[in-house]
Length: 483
Ligand SMILES: C[S@@+](CC[C@H](N)C(=O)[O-])C[C@H]1O[C@@H](n2cnc3c(N)ncnc32)[C@H](O)[C@@H]1O
Image (cartoon, rainbow, N blue to C red):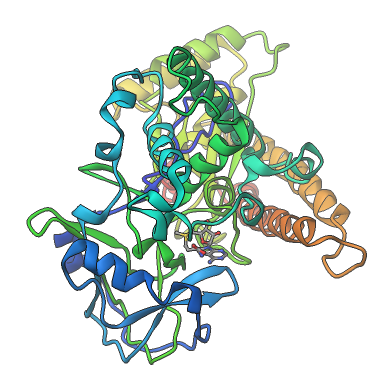
């Protein structure tokens, strides 16, 4: 599903859709298995799916799983242990031959679609073609089990009023970008099929958007491209687990290895990726109440009234390393910065991204000489700009107080928005709105938590600068995370 590069910068965005990510099979040796069992959801077998695994195994001509059953969870279908599972057991193997990939695109359709149509859209067309032929489709038992539009909460389906709840977060803009991309793909497909109306001539934008969201939330990306992996895609997500979907090129299958023991009836979860709630909401239509991978995007501008604005922009651009990508491929570029939870306010541990602090130091310069000193210092070191504390204490304090002010303002806005969200149990709240409001609350409180941790760190740093003798080499070990 997600190898995620999320749009993170309104000015510099390019559209990369996250997809579930399969790791190569030998990745299993690196997993750090925990062996204790935690109680999880109980299994309510999904009788509608009794025939699903036998059908898929017959199609594959191979055993896929003898320890998992499809059941009902609080979040749609899910897989549950049907017998005891031990840490390290292979719990399912889905051969490539029963996965849906771009190879399933009919040649007459493939030849009509150019490169302007993305792979998610192309795989969505495969799904739409199979939906169109209904029970005659060789994939009917799978296609008929996919969630219906009304069951999905990806932010692309949210109304403008619902989106207003998350305007504060970067996911708002990302949703608009994703809608644009889907519209562009739809128009390109309509153009491609205009002379052959019998091929999906009746395709609607709503149907296409639904199919794209199904692919985005259930397809895995690997070296062999994008694939929908029936049965494995009934597994729900837990951001803390180590179990992921692995690809075995030699055996030509996708596998999952248990990262802990499970008792019969326990829900088995995997990790789709180390995704913050913003990504989970955009691409999967859910959020976690407490997400350890949460992060927040902040935007910082050089004011137009700054007399050195052009010089500063020029300097930053000359020293701008290629956008740093974190583990999920998120960008941290010139004026948009990704902040992860800052673990310690006491000088040790991870601090704010260095790129953000560097930006603030450049901003603090008031003469061309100061800017040129920063450029010289960068040339004498590793080439990166303003990574060391400024030699002038007041400027170093000013730069960090400026950041603190920005973060404090954001905290106030987040606080106000969260307070404006009506408690979920206050009637009359319809089901769909209640779910989306809770997602908005999870998202904003997670981002607020990150901002508060950054604020604590900055306050502590400024206090240190104000209260101790200033030797910029000493504060240099007040660690910041690379970025
Ligand atoms: C790969 S599918 C998993 C199977 C899905 N539950 C079903 O009914 O087919 C991914 C979807 O499951 C749901 N989901 C997975 N993990 C979840 C979680 N931890 N909390 C809420 N919803 C979850 C979301 O709707 C997501 O888009």
